[in-house]
Image 1 (cartoon, helix red, strand yellow):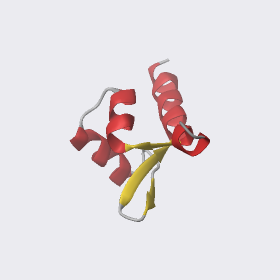
Image 2 (cartoon, one colour):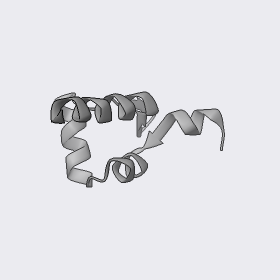
Image 3 (cartoon, one colour):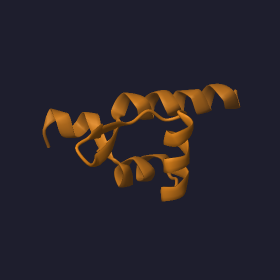
Image 4 (tube, rainbow, N blue to C red):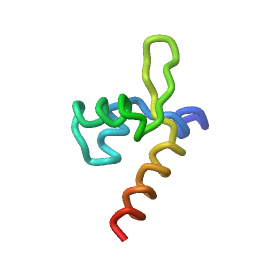
Length: 62
């Protein structure tokens, strides 16, 4: 695994990390709640976006 692979996740990996389904991840991206980037035809979620999203969830639950 290269450093780039560790920093950007394909949608199925991001879904698994968050424990959500395909529809929900697209909903979060479309609403701007979860940042993503597009390289060519592939949509990727940065590791930092996953970390920020999880932190936001934890803060709102507190």
